[in-house]
Length: 66
Image 1: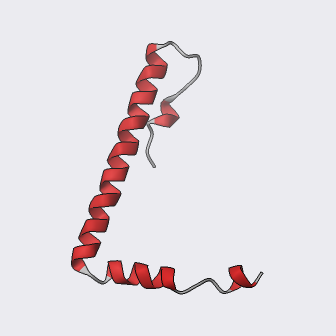
Image 2: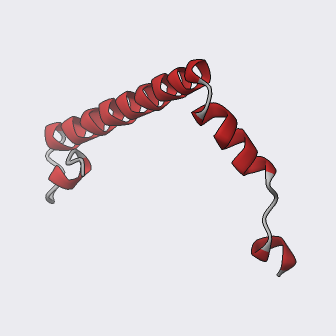
């Protein structure tokens, strides 16, 4: 229980370092954008393949972003 009630502070330190350093923050934003674009692309390809194969069902939820 102690591990969850009092988490280590180094995670917060890493986040604070990244968010307070413009260079690191910019790099982090670029990395997040690249991950988003990759996931979006893979979901679109998966959706297209399901439609191409005539897979029964409704698959729009795969490509809908919230």
